[in-house]
Length: 275
Image 1 (cartoon, helix red, strand yellow):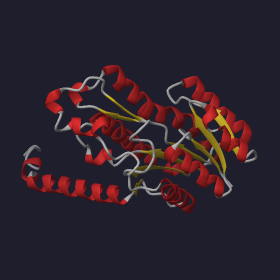
Image 2: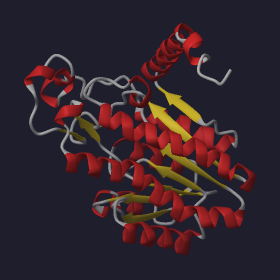
Image 3: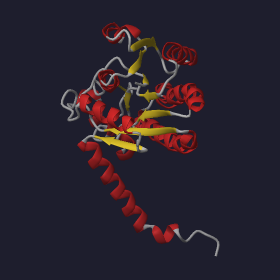
C-alpha cells in the first residue's frame, strides 16, 4: 500500500486516477479547489482517503495540503500533477492575464507541488512524480499554442527532474494523453474573449462554439487510469507514457516530420562549427 497525492480530482482523469488507486488498495489524498466536490470519495473510503482543498497557484495551500498528507499517512509516495484546464486562442488573440494564469496553474503549480513533496521522497529514497502533459505539446494544433507551450514546459522540466532524482531512488514521468471523454472540451475549456476574424479558418475552428468533440472523444478515462497505475506499480515507469490511439498516432507523425526536417537541413546544421 502506498500513498498517492493527486491534484484536480473533482472530475475527469484526476478522479479516474483516484478511483483506480483506491480500488488497488492504496491511500489517496484527493484535492480540488472546492473540496466539497471530492468529499464523496472520503466518505466512501474513510480509512484510505484524505480530502484536501487545493488551488495549485496558492503557495500556502500547497504547503498545507502536503503537510496534511504527511501527518495523516506519513508521506507521499506518488504525486500526480493533474490539475489544469484548456485554453484556446490564436497567439495574437491571447489575453496577457489569461496566459499568466495558464502558466501559473500548469507550470508553476506542477513545480510547487513537486518541490513540496521532494524533501520527503529524498529522505525515504523512493517516490514517483507523475506530470500530466498532452499530445498537444507534440502536435501543437492551431489555436492551442499557449496550452501546447505550458505542456511542453512541463515535459522539459520532468525530463530534467528525472535525471536529477534518479540517483536518489526517485523517478519522474510524463503522461501524454490524447482526447479522453472528460469535460476538458466542455466546462474546463477556456478561450480568448475576442476572436480575430482573420483566424476564423485556423484557430477559430477550434473555439468552443465550433468544436463538436465534447462527449465524443475516443479515450476511456477508466482505461487510462488502469494503465497509469499499472505503470507506476511496475517500478519501471518510462519518461513518457502516451495514452490513446490518437496520441500514439500523433506523436509518431510529429517525430516523422521532425526527422524529415532534420534530414533536409542537415548540411546546414553541420556547417556552423569552426573549421
